[in-house]
Image 1 (tube, rainbow, N blue to C red):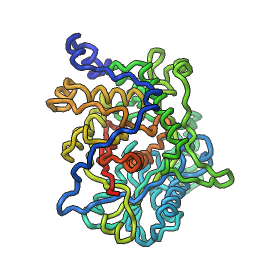
Image 2: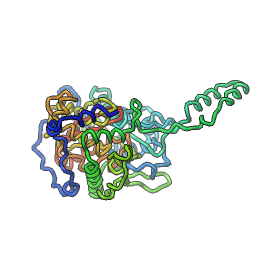
Image 3: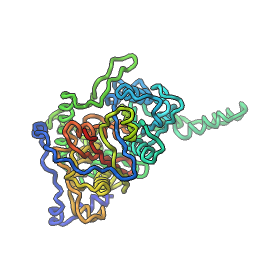
Image 4: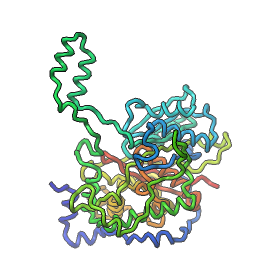
Length: 475
């Protein structure tokens, strides 16, 4: 059955479709790469609030994000998280004993280290007296880690928090079938030989069929890629537009990497292997080459392919956040303030990936800002089709009125301010670690370009989303 959203858009009168203006300005990678630095406006108001502590980002790092099955394939998640924590300690020289709490996000948990934050912290040499816990919220897990830390600091419970995230897609849990698991558990409880033989006699060969994990929604049993394809169709996003956007992401990421702008990346000496120094998923191609790929999810007519989707990625990130007065007392010059943030949730079938469209106007209104006030946009790129569908939704009065309960659209992010150092399509997307990368990209871009406000937004499984305002720290 066609989704409600798809049906609605396909059956609008022609005049309504025109009124929606569902078209994205032509994407030209070459023009983007040639674009001159954006002229910044004069300093705007600060978003500091009376009687609420200022929360600052001192610095943040990530180990290189790598394609799954490459240099990290023989490690465990806590190894990657430990490397990110060690890199953060080396970058900031923060005394380990001043850290009050450590929070990490992850999505696919390794059962041996279910609280990966704690295991990584101990491995990195933090005191066993420093509490640590792990959170999960799909692709916005490290966003949740950051905002949980934000809350602890703003409420006065803590002064210094380390937040981060990790994902190792090279080694994911594959379970025995439920029947096999039940038999093994019952065998473990059996007390006599007769009881064991009776249980074994019930064994059947199909018990050995493994349960393979799938990146699919539990509530809808639909893969995210399938949802992205339907969303692109609903918003009339063409295959060419998606390929052009993906090429833009890879081209800008390569440019940023070559120019040393990805300063949050720290080297990682992989045990028994060479030191990894840079992301390995950045691969600018050509539209002709991309056009040769077959649809990955909806076959044979889908538009989402391996080239315009984010890839399975291994990686970890970590960020040092503090109360401003604590950071200054310790002699730090923070990079940015963490300001207002929101979480949103909507229908996980028809609007699974529209989190940024819903979260962006809410966080702007909460902060008293408009799209014109934002100097750096950093949105998670799950799929090209997802980004472009969000663009069209954000630029539609009709969508705002009929789906968001708003009178007018929020508006389209200017491409010259949007993910200009690449995004998840090119840099990679370790599910639990991307949020910290987005915030550090926004903070570093604001410092580099002289902007004041950054807006970070992301979609997540379950139809959820997040947005946050990052404010540059005064130089």
